[in-house]
Image (cartoon, rainbow, N blue to C red; front, side, top):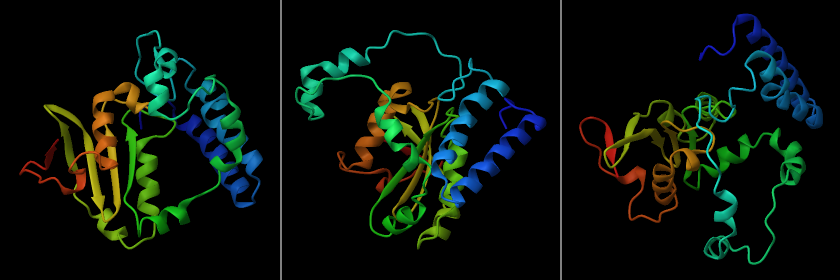
Length: 221
């Protein structure tokens, strides 16, 4: 719906989607992983172009990353409990989890929702894990709060004077969309992400679920 592909190109994506679904259904997870990668790599470059990031489709200014410096600081190492373990970039983790990524955990989510609070969040301008896909998945879940979620009121989420996003919830399930953020929500909107995670993990004395709403369906935190 964003205009990056036309009807003919959509057919190519649809063919790849059907191929992926068949491979998953047959338990051919290795080829399913390859097919999935093509949707955001070869086919994406062909139809959309590598100039448009799958992580954030809005143009971004090139900025020097301070991540390497931050992650190596003694205070950071202590906070994330890694000790003196050397830090390095690499794809080993992704490669070892390629098969797991295409295997469904839907039954686990349905079961866990009966016992534990779960937050699903997406950045507004993410392509690779787009917000509508998460909503589609959540609406397909079969659990005790299913109808409550489908009929839940959607609220505005404000952090100070900022409209940070929108959310809805039912029982243990909360769905939240972060405005002006892509795949890397904490990098794009650090203040809002910090607020969201602290509430989700109970660091604050309140959560998104138990704050009183005003007449405009807004929530201020």
